[in-house]
Image (cartoon, rainbow, N blue to C red; front, side, top):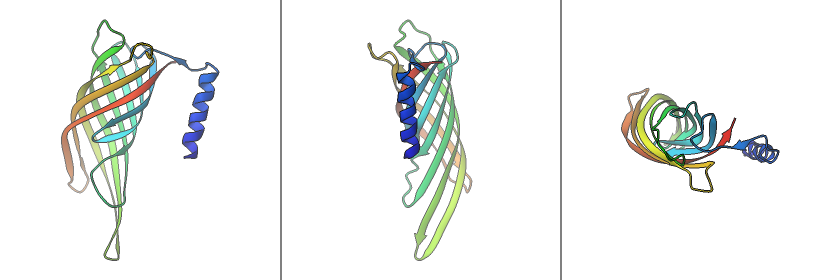
Length: 174
């Protein structure tokens, strides 16, 4: 909790000093910082526009495995983004490919005995979405997406299926 407060205060301070400048969502060299969530994982996100059509994204957070009990999950996903060219700089349709490293730790007690186990998975996914910035808020991109993804945990548990999600990012000019 203390770390997030310090990070927020540093962000406000740098923004106030005009060290960080806002940028439109489709400009080359723009870094978008925000949150991204799908039905599989969610977390803080950074998107970077390498060119007008090529970009990358990193998502660090947690996952929803639908498991009860005391479960801790960690996910790190990297994405390649391909933005389809268009005339409107406020609307950006894109496709993506994703690879990730996901881990889950169980810690439960059953009838007086403790059950502790951890498992890791290499996750994959691909899909498409659209990012939009409202007029007057060109530096703030809202996205929705759909895709297909999955993976397999050590121990034989595998998952795959269609996922839906969305996010919001504020873009800075580096």
